Image (cartoon, rainbow, N blue to C red):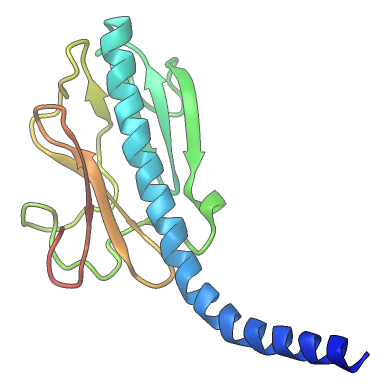
Length: 168
């Protein structure tokens, strides 16, 4: 009986040490997951546009984004008639994952940060974006960590992490 009691006490001590470390690690893990999911969904939209030889778009709203298929002349908004293929809500990740700059002080490539792209990222049938410039969405969490996910004009999908002084 004493041996079992000693094992329980040791486990309790180990748990009291592990829980604070886990609570510091979890928000950044969730943010990284959200950034990787956005990266993957941008790749999905690009591949679907090439595969179906039609335009696909990623539409950003406060707290969520949607992947939609539709023509270039359609309005990409919640009230439009686009076929919504996937919808992602950032609060579902937990740890206050949201669109925002967090601790980042400069946009990818310089300039000022706009957390949400004002226009959707649209991929044409060749996998290029129809946007005239690079477009990035910025993600942050409760610990003010930052990721930038977006596309270059060439259609290349890019994921960057803010290291405290620059994007890597």
